[in-house]
Image 1 (cartoon, rainbow, N blue to C red):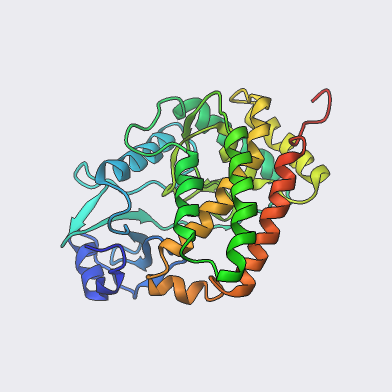
Image 2: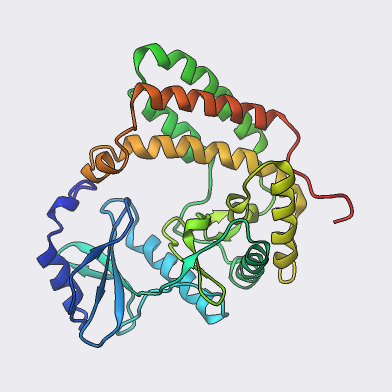
Length: 323
């Protein structure tokens, strides 16, 4: 089954798959914002709301998906707020006509406010608890953050995408960024991570609720922290100190990992470009990202990479003395 055959995932197939697990939808299927997988919300005859997630074929193995599920279930066991999959008859991953899928309870909530220091501190507390309680046992099947996957492979893929007149300036700066990131990315310790802990993957109810562990992997602790920092250096420093105040109530943070933030940002930038190129055959990507692969897009990326190269050459973000 090809990674680009989501067009074959028909509504009747979705409903039949859900009903195969004894859950009977009473509403229509509301497509949620997901590009890598296909995710739908619905209400069932039992009066509850659910979310069903169909995994993109050829992306993760069953063993990798089950490690994600086990990780989220273990978080729930130690009271880290996470949307964990439903377990039915001892299983959380189901197969219907070759489609791998999972069902989650549907939870509501507001968006996490990145400029709300009280919310940042609460998120820090739960991330510290997550890393302290369940982070130390590394994933066996899921990947670790690595420069080959995040830098080398996407850059090689992109060689067939750049307009002729922009290829030279793009790869000149992109290769400098990649080399600087490789030199600086030397984590001392890796743990199990959420992996994609940005504000859109945090809901706010009475407190934070983590969602979407699709990119869970091994890596340095700072990977789960840096994407919540925004603004200029002073703003990011204040946010970081508040985040770590909550985090260190449960788990010690090695401040030397702050030097990994800009390498991780560079890796995310280049991997994202490669991700769009790799998925471009999927019509959903062409609808959602119509600006990708335009002349203006690549010009903007050249400028962004130049700024990132400058950031990699500067001293890393530091904490206020005496923190």
